[in-house]
Length: 595
Ligand code: C2E
Ligand code: CA
Ligand code: CA
Image 1: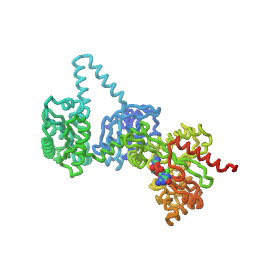
Image 2: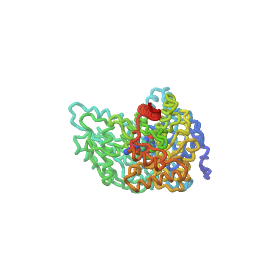
Image 3: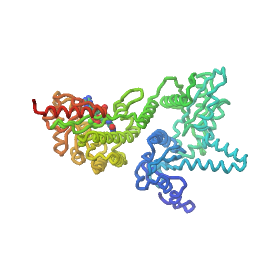
Image 4: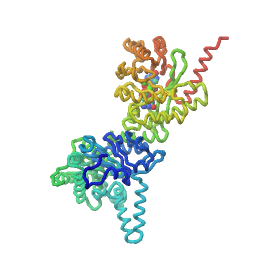
């Protein structure tokens, strides 16, 4: 924080630390750059712990999603979010309910050069509720005052402070009238989802005050256009909803056209004449009592289409029309539930020492037992988990589950003590500042020797930012785990980095193993990968070995380990244990002297 030079202004630094709310400042990519004493006191975290980490790291998974799908986009669009209910995990691992508000600084604040900062304030939700309760109690002294206070609180809770329109909660509370039409009423409910075009540009160029003024003007224009039996609400940012009883789709789209025309008329904002436009999505409630959320969701889909078709227009939603981004959000919700509700599974594929034929380890491969689609392979959900950030909790779960299994196998059969457990890390996990702590924590909980854990990172992930990767690998190596370069041959490593990276093995990509013996190019590549690994003093591992010829060729080429369907497919834990037992038995039988 920089002090102020204007003597008429308060000392902001002192104010910042003593403010009744917790305050955090982050840079534009979400890293915490300052935190006030109130926040530290409230959460029990230490300042060095928080600086540099991300705010969402302090939230439970569900709230991380809310934050990344709701707060972040809204911050991008309107520059501010207010009073989002989230939970913050304190140093004691306890969750604290908080009301989070945030705003972005203008792009070129003097204090921060061209760096945008986001200022978050969080205060304990309980405190907020307590304040309301106190307000009620004070008002109780006089019945009239109490009634007034209650009414005000009620109004506050249901209305948007800026425009005075209903907010989302208010919208829900007034729906009764719509959802229970008088008997014999043939009218339908239409939802008009209104989103201003280029609102962000107004905010960015003229500032938030102008943006707010514009929103108020829009609200003022929307209100009189609607009839007695209709509702206008502001959902968030520059999104408004009009609910109206109509005789049919035509009446609804006519209303949309009228609203477009009304909004297009110039508005006077801070002495400037501004012409704005909106995109409107229209949906008509289905006869069989469709829920209001569903109706608004469909109007939202139509609004997106209006945007895509060039803005400043309305579009009508046709029932059964689906939207890819909405499908994706739904899938993401399912995956989040899947992770929390124990729907993930780990299968284990044996890794064989080609010199001795012994199973020396397993690779943990995640699956998702989907409620309707069956057991899904990682290709169906890892990408989505990476993009959304869910990979952090997914990856942590796979690691914990694998180590739990390792401990269990050891208790059942001490022969398994030497098995090595390979777990895949995604690129996003590698860049996560909390990774090392997560790994250490998982190891500590299970008392598994770190040297028995092998973390696999793809060559592409390593080479996307080799210097950062080198740092992460070095820190992981300090924990005592082993490291592997996965899918080697697909990511253009340089020998320089391969020598620098503290890795223990190189896993030759399956595509080259497939061409072994049949494709001379692939055979040569596999040969040089093995030589390369040995030249830098690490083991070479072949994956995707499907035939005994491939296994033989690899053995003769000096490859150290192999895994693939030829030996075993990835198996659920109980089957893997049976497989291990049977293969040990078989080996003992072959080595027994004949009768
Ligand atoms: P990967 O790390 O290269 O894993 C090997 C993949 O090859 C596995 O696919 C395995 O089932 C398959 N495979 C093994 N032997 C053979 C074979 O002989 N022939 C053929 N055709 N395939 C074979 P899977 O389980 O579908 O996993 C795909 C990828 O998903 C993995 O590739 C890995 O990148 C990713 N993945 C799996 N589990 C995790 C996880 O827990 N975290 C992360 N971040 N990624 C994971
Ligand atoms: Ca792997
Ligand atoms: Ca691989």
